[in-house]
Length: 397
Image (tube, rainbow, N blue to C red; front, side, top):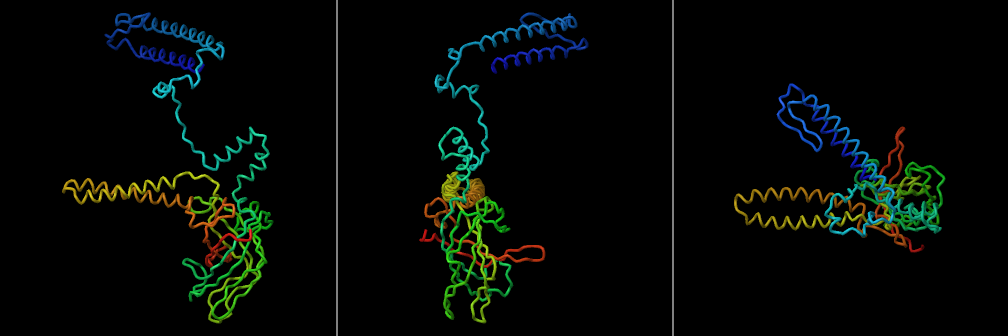
């Protein structure tokens, strides 16, 4: 049907085009050209009368063509579905299909993100399945990355001390002294019913349980270890808030007293109250988009070509060096761009050496994270760096 409708429109356009050409003629134009068609002719001697005749002829031809095409269109529409005129893809010769561009459909650019694609596929599968595994509630749970951390237990070691860029007082930790604080916690699946700006949305926040409600200050030369009471906190995965749109795991604990060495010379302390921690979070079930490997291969190829080109420049003649040096400049620019893209892709697909995995291996977090405290300045809020932390999955899962 679409094909015959297209023929109707094409016939009408051609007829209109010829009519416009003829209407452009005037008696003041010295016409010597003779226009001929299947049913009529026009010469310079009978210009005005022939124009009217030509218009009538065209209208008649147009009506006749439309009637024939409509009749043919109706006839084809009435054919049975199994008629020889209908052809499946399997009936078409492969080479003929590839070489005939009229049969090829244009490829649309796919702007669908990976998350959108996975969600759409799950919804499509759920729509045609009676399997309880694809119920709406199960679908919602499967699309929440933070569920992969539910119930996982971790051992954390806080390394409190002066870090570059901290906004802590200028005399805080200037001696280089560090406080080592250890505790174990569980990222529970229980809803946190308390608002905390550091976590963001309360609806996605969950309870962080500190084992035995304590952390341990490691011993030093002058004093032994000490236990400090600590309250449970909360945690949440901040989607897309990290570098290059990566995910961040944010959580906090609440310390009941200021932590400091008993020595009078100590210049570093951990303030009482909530201590905030953050690190990278990665869903290891999410398929790779392959960008990291593609940029890595491209970068290796560019480095190999640069080494070859360096030798060619050394052996090239005076004038030949100009062209090869220009190529080397372009090569270095592309190498820098590819290296930047590779680093960006490496943030989203980090090497396993910088990660610590859940017991199931379905999720991972970076083994080093940041520690900070909240400071109220007037009506504003600042987060001052206290140090960093190291983590590993607890053996007591």
